[in-house]
Length: 254
Image 1 (cartoon, helix red, strand yellow):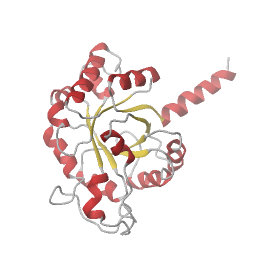
Image 2: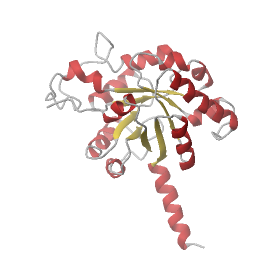
Image 3: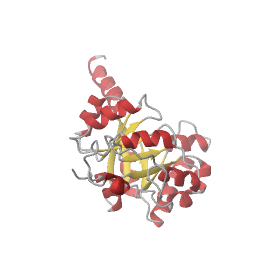
Image 4: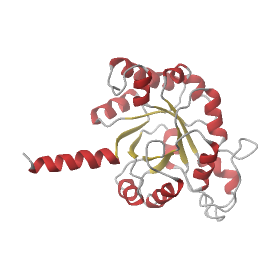
């Protein structure tokens, strides 16, 4: 049994834009449905969604036949949680609230076995096909994608030092928390926030590091792609369900 290839990581490395969707419903069936919609990546959110490791596994199983790579966002940059997610078969992680180079290095190290990191070693896990993947321990890191989330002014000031950490595959700009950090809570459309978002992608392009972002506005998603953002989530399962349901009800309720 060969180690599965990480299509999302490869797409970023080759400079191909990756279109994504956010998932907060913590449902294996929902993950199965949306993973077949044609997206390149789907975030399984543990930070702001009611996910635990077991529900993440159910969603990873549901996504096996879809087009999208699962990107799991742990609740924190915690090596214990990271270890459990990796052993469960997650191959792409989005670490929230990374503030500096040291925290980015810690995130990467938690995904690497010694001597390159400090990921705990277990031979018979879902990640290794329960011991069936050839040379899993030696080759696992080649298919693990590490994304770090920059979402404060302090982190934005250190953007280049965070982005250039060896092993960081991409930098996600968190628009909502960045808006709050800049004094515009709930208003990511504010000109100051948008200037920071557009400035970040230009800085990341200069150093050759893929930039990512989330929006629920289709026009904004296209604008970010046009600006050079390489992995863009253009909505969420919660938003699709809520807004779609409201639109349907409105059709009949005048």
